Length: 199
Image (tube, rainbow, N blue to C red):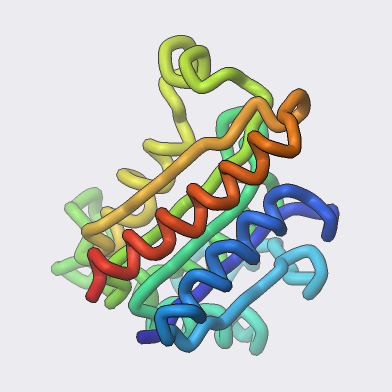
């Protein structure tokens, strides 16, 4: 089974990276072939070009390689912090450029006329892990947990991914070593559960 893990956090020593490594290790342990990308370390260019915005295929070889990996994966994991209820700019740019029309989705009439999209991704399961400094209850009750809606409804279901697991870990800023250790164990468990759902 092919898996793709993508992390978007500027600090290599971040808890986001630890979560990404926990997911990668869990999927390797069950025999997955795992592609791994640290967007900041690799210097991914998040700037959507004018032609890409109009639906043209990318001319950027790195973006084209990411698209090929996304289209080929059976499992997808994305890890990033909550930035104002949205992915950070680097991750948003990756989404904009890689979840591209005619790569991740299309339209039955061949053009976006407001119709429902046809998902093109073969991934059978996705795992989204986010970190934040807002208590989970407040994030859900006051803000409506927009990241869950963005990933589950606006991106993954739109592109044809049926099984989406997600967790928001926090409050990271005041978390203890024991709490972080438990969260890493939870991330590994969720990765294995996602693999089982997709098998």
